[in-house]
Amino acid sequence: MLVEAQGVIGMRMMGMTGMFPADAGETTRMVSEKHTAFTESGMAVMGALMAGKTPAQAYGMGLTPIGRTTRANSRRLARQMSR
Image 1 (cartoon, rainbow, N blue to C red):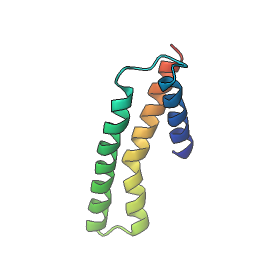
Image 2: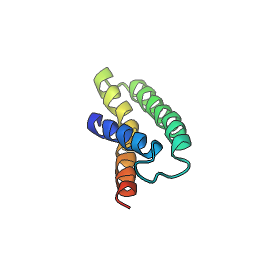
Image 3: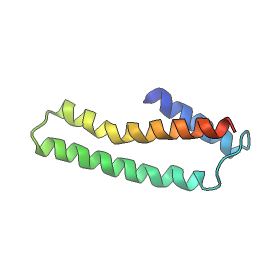
Image 4: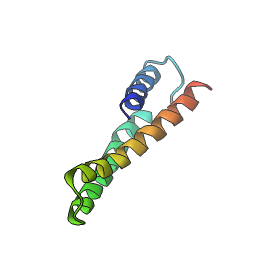
């Protein structure tokens, strides 16, 4: 996830500077998707802890929505760059 996140940041920066065509709503999407991912993450952590999972298990479950979003962004932005 760390490598994908760095790639997403790099691709978004290149898109913002005009180095490759980026969708017009990319900046707005960048902000709004974080709210959704972190809300899902918090819900997953709370659900796991309430279900009696260990803190390590809850941590892993909390990272799942963030990793899913990061992976999707990495793939989507890579496709945009190849246009």
